[in-house]
Length: 96
Image: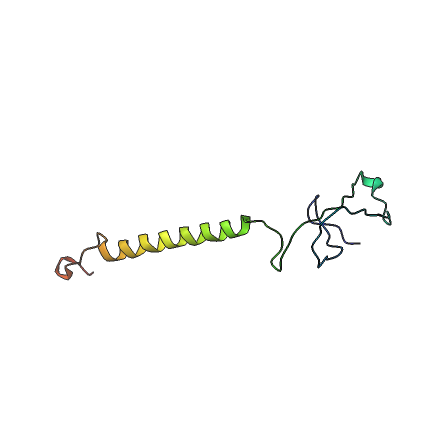
């Protein structure tokens, strides 16, 4: 068994394709002992789609990075167009 990257992780065991209404009873067998490292096992029923669960963190990070990149683009374009750079008079240059 490969160790997990984070101390808290979820492993998908199965998918239920019907609506869950009513009361259910689950019988769970402990096939892998986790008491050696004080581990715990939990049963979690959640809703997920093809893109995973409902976690907007990654979308917020992508939109924030795109916003920062767009602001920097506007700043660089304005600096390029209206920068304080002037033309040089070549007569004032001295070449040795």
